Image (tube, rainbow, N blue to C red; front, side, top):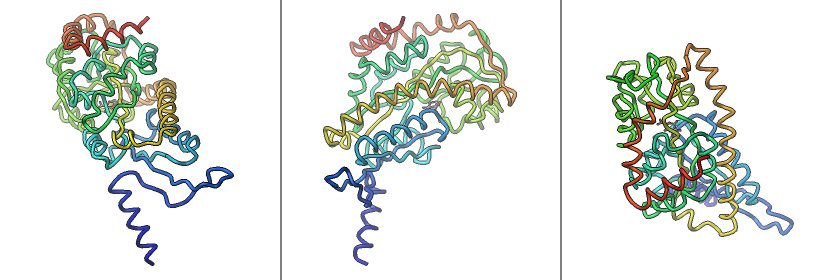
Length: 338
Ligand code: GCU
């Protein structure tokens, strides 16, 4: 009885206080050293069909295998652990170990992050892949450690485009149109420069806000557009491709620093591989999402992006020239473009 009570208490502590430890023992090898599995809780704001969820799932399988069962992930999709801001706090406090959060969320801890989420910074997926699989973002990623978390790397979330009740083919079309943006000053300015009215709002509120006429549209990638059924309220998706915002993989600083050295090396290598792998999963999903939206009446419109790129230039210059760090990162990222 005592034993059962104790196991119950340990399990409860695991849920509240950090990563769960499975009591079941695993045989590591012939030496039969018992291994306790540490379950890393991960907050995710989108569905379990999302490319990033799938990439994390694969990461978990490989991590468990390669560390002989020392670590695995438990991913909670659909904002079950709160929106991205709430999830970041849980990671900071060590209640959970990891989360995937949009770049604007981390921008509120260090404004320099605005530079890696600038509109028209990345030319295309290949360019972004080169950046995300290189080490050029490492200095900025480490910079938030005093806040209790670190950025391990970035997932792609494709190219973001405007969607509303009519095609947006030139900046003048945006006049008087309120577009929901992620919650940061840079994101608001982005739409303002493009010709519309940037309206910061949580992702979960967008559908109803468009439906009720609080805003006229949103901006996102094809996958989220289809996943959240935004085509029902905003059927014209115009390929402005104005933003390829990084989705950052964050981890609790104490947990990360206290990982066993060898296992952490495996963990770090697998994170890198996962980031690369997610680009492919992403590309495979875009066409499916487009088809789903089109089958439900959405129209995808190709446009000339040059006038939008021109309008965005002052914002790029302003953010890139903020300080030495932003200047260097901007130049390093651009240097990887073809
Ligand atoms: C994308 C991105 C998310 C972000 C969302 C948003 O789906 O991948 O990280 O939360 O857009 O617009 O809020």
